[in-house]
Image (cartoon, rainbow, N blue to C red; front, side, top):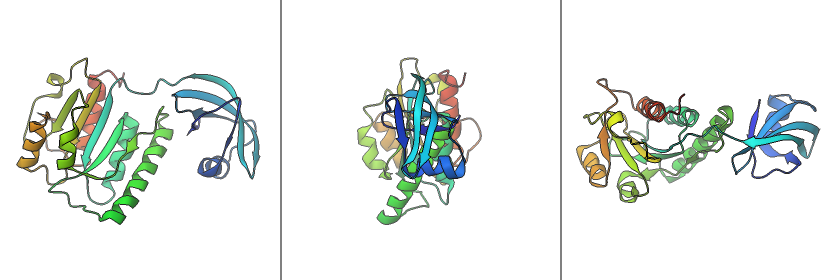
Length: 240
């Protein structure tokens, strides 16, 4: 069932813009076929296509129910920028795995260091990838991908989380020893290709982060976020 996001929906709704083009040109759907619309209140609406015109795709609601696809924990991923298009893959797969929010982070050893104009374009591209991944995986929300932030600015604003975990190649505790059943808002940090500087580790731990390990092997910068998310989702029962 093809999945699209809307703000609100009544008995009927007209889909316009890129979504309408995707329905008609890419999916080649016709009147009578059925799609699902997910609204801002995490309600999913099963709808039948009633009319296709230059104005858009008009649908009528068949049934409505609560969307149960979201994880029981809100995981915010603070991922160091990676070179090339690796970050795009991290964002796509993280959304599929259930991440709540993604913050691209600029650290000392980041190879990718875009200027403000390039950073803005990357941000727009990242958010589009997140939206497409949320549609594909039938999420109830589109996870936000924020603007690129510097690590030192982030470190002072971690009080909102129940648990802050730094996955560090230098070692740390096993994940099962860190996450408690009452932890509902979790922040995780993963590093760039060259890893974290010791002073960056100290900065985060001084602000409440705990170091954790992902095993005895050193994972690539684009692998670590996905392994960390998978482990957290499994540990909290969200892969059952």
